[in-house]
Amino acid sequence: MTNDILIFAEQRNDNLHPAAMQIVTAARMLAEKTGGQVVACVVGDAIDGATGAIDAAGVDRIVTVSDPALAMYSATRYRTALAAVLQRVDPCVVLLPATFMGRDLAPRIAARVKGGLATDVVALDMVDGTLDAFRPIYGGKASCHVTFPEGKPAIASVRPNTFPAASGGGGGAREAVPFEATPGDERITVKEIMKTSGEVKDVTEADIIVAGGRALKNEENFKIIFDLAKLLDAAVGASRAACDAGYQPHSRQVGLTGKTVTPVLYIACGISGAIQHLAGMRGSKVIVAINTDPEAPLFKVADYGIVADLFKIVPLLTEEVKKLER
Image 1 (cartoon, rainbow, N blue to C red):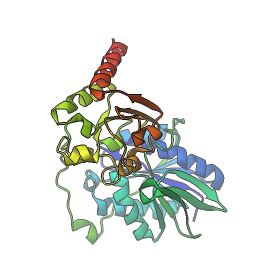
Image 2 (image 1 turned 90 degrees about the vertical axis):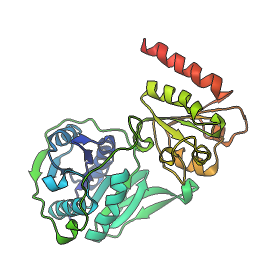
Image 3 (image 1 turned 90 degrees about the horizontal axis):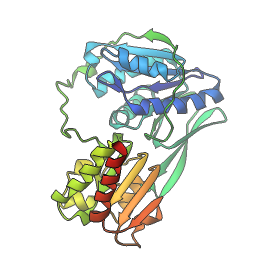
Image 4 (image 1 turned 30 degrees about the vertical axis):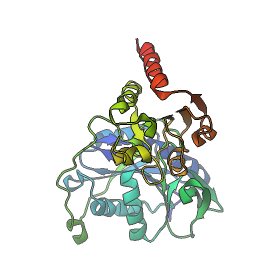
């Protein structure tokens, strides 16, 4: 086993996922302690753009697996491709972004190579030559350190926006690995991937989220949330109460029973801050809470709080953002 750190550089339609740039930073930090290289793996078809983007992040080596069969994400085929790269690189640590794809792929890789796995990691370190991963548990009520046995690859999925994006120089050596499908890869074939969210960003992939709660009273009133989100190039989120009431689809629900998010900015409008909601968004870098109740639990974790009617404050914020764009 080498001292190298392998990262899975997730791409979609030849566009590198922002979280891939972030785990380069984590990988570089670990590589400085192991004395190894940062090796990026890009899987897909027609991936020159994504490969160039990860190269610009300053990795030491790039391994690509390109094949028409990998044009669309398939858990079994991507597992086979990434496992082949692991066999070639033989890294001590493997990092994946904790995106939908990364969360699906990480346990499959761990099972295939018989390695240890830590998911949704928020801090990483090397202790006595082995990976130490720090991750929240019990819906964010507690945290734990996950350690790995020696002689086996340590695999971790890293929560997006935990580390800053890397911006090093390019020039990493490149190597192509042929894709060889196994019989199990053909059991499921992906024919088409359809987006259902329209032009609205998914909350798990947005740097800014504007979220609304039950205080918005109905679906029509969410228009003021969408107006502000559009100006900020943000995603629209919602509390469980708002989703259960039918104001927004559950695909936008933030919380323990919805989606866990870690944006740079989280603006909560009319959300009191139930425990399950806090568990899904308290990792946000900056939290702004707007609520008429000064005792709302969300104010305890917010960086900025506005005790006021959201129907007055949100339109005012929207107008101020418009002024900045003029």
